[in-house]
Length: 230
Image (cartoon, rainbow, N blue to C red; front, side, top):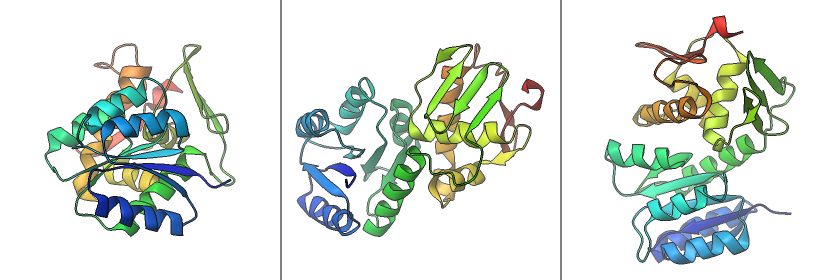
């Protein structure tokens, strides 16, 4: 069965264009022109991925995303005409996986959708699918993470960052490398997103995020899974 994408934007031209490109790639598409409709369709259509405009009438994208994250870890992409870092950070901290700035190429958005769905469903080829670092365990096939025996709910991008790091303890990954692993392409403008994903991960897996046991910052370079945690 074709995967279902919910696209919410108050600009009909964007809805029509994005929907056409997604359908051409074989996806089912559900559309909404405001935030309340988006949340209604999310709850009734159960999409595999959500594309949300930030600025919508009746209920903005931030509010819709917060409501979705209380119910689901479905992959979520924000669309916005605003390019301020604080807006991007806000969206990522709410639990968005990616942030696409208008104007954008529909082909690029479709590529992001495809990559995020592939990442979410764990297509990893012949790589190992389960890793354990002390009290932290990740199972790619089951899409589960546990720490100190307790399950941890992660967004697809948080899961992807953790999987890259836990698979190579001690190996330092730059922000651009992590972006490339997640998206299949890396843009310098999006480097900050990795910092937000790591911040969110630490809040979920570390006893004290200020003194992390697992994800270590290598200043001026990037991040690694602490080798002494193995």
